[in-house]
Amino acid sequence: MTSIPQAPDILSPEFATDPYPAYRVLREHYPLLHHEGTGSYLISRYEDVERAFREPVFTSDNYDWQLEPVHGGRTLPQMSGREHAVRRALVAPAFRGRELRETFLPIIERNARELIDAFRGAEEVELVGQFATRFPINVIVDMLGLDRADHDRFHGWYTAVIGFIANLAQDPGVAADGRRAGEELAAYLHPVIRQRRAAPGDDLLSRLCTAEVEGIGMTDQDITAFVSLLLSAGGETTDKAIALTVRNLLAHPDQLAAVRADRSLIPAAFAETLRHTPPIQMIMRQPAADVTLSGGTVPAGATVTCLIGAANRDPRRYARPDTFDVFRPDLTPANAFSAAAQHVAFGLGRHFCVGALLAKAEVETGVNQLLDSFPDLGFADDTAPADAGVFTRGPRQLRLRLGSARG
Ligand code: HEM
Image 1 (cartoon, rainbow, N blue to C red):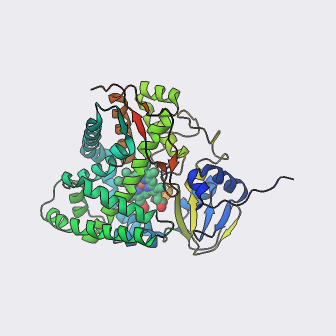
Image 2 (spheres, helix red, strand yellow; image 1 turned 180 degrees about the vertical axis):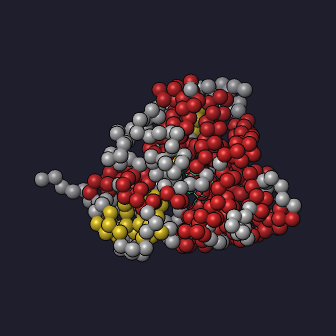
Image 3 (cartoon, protein in one colour; image 1 turned 90 degrees about the horizontal axis):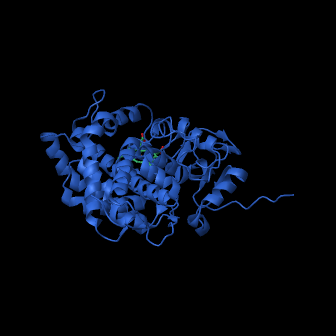
């Protein structure tokens, strides 16, 4: 008789060290598990997580308490129906197509170059602190047309806002810091918004001030809440994604060599990183009615925690799910940044990540410039650092030996 392993605790230290063995136990033995610590139902199979993202019965009302207090207003993730469709249409065009290519790509390239230039010539870099956590925030500040001298202040607000969102243990000090940062950000933005309404430019903030869909525009509060959302949704995620993509490639020298030789493989390396080691490991939902999933029924009004990191390694979905393989046939890079994605790292359905193509442009630019600048890039102490974090996850530090620099 084979014994069934004990149900894992996603708030335990072992889980924080390495969640993947626990995800395996959950998928195989507890596909639906009520977890006391978070007061939520855990789901871990790809099929169930996909349904939770796609089916409207799974509302995102949980964001009313997860996001609204720190952003100081309603934001896209908590909206549904027409409110969501109109609000999404107001902001989405800025993050794709010509707008992204022509207006924002030069900003992305310049910011990557400036950060890399600051450590060119050094023997070593700590890529998380000196590049990854700075790059996406600097890009957002510049896209919004805000003062570049304020990059550091934004970095501080961003750190406090993501602290609030990832505060699974509900530490009151962390929550207060997050709310204070939200208020400071709003106070900083209000006079700038007034100026942009009076004299709009072609920056993202001016576009948010003037955008209109079906006669609806954005109030000052809508805009400050959206900017606060951008810092968290577009900052920490992309920061982790860059560090993870570089770490995963350096840990697989044959795949790194292939990507060095053919840079059109970078999107595949990023897509496989999103599947194998997703920066956001879990997202919540709140079903409006009883729903039956693998393993049982979730009652209406309960909170469901969708374990993205578990779903993305479901053997029902992927061959050799624990293997990092840029060439895997069961993940198509061409779809990986659209709602037709074959992974759930950007969600799926109506809330599919608005910034997926921006993230792709940032990771492509950052990785390309790093590979161009440092032909001998390697781990500083010859070992790949492990990841840390439960809600979001990535290497805390990534010390790299730079070798001789080029360019
Ligand atoms: C690798 C980087 C990124 C990852 C892994 C990621 C992940 C996600 C996920 C999982 C969702 C769905 C949330 C849900 O369904 O509840 C989402 C939504 C969203 N993301 Fe991203 N994201 C990334 C980059 C970005 C960037 C660069 C931006 C913009 C600057 C952005 C803006 C948003 C917004 C505004 C939403 C809400 C969309 C809606 O509710 O309709 N994200 N993202």
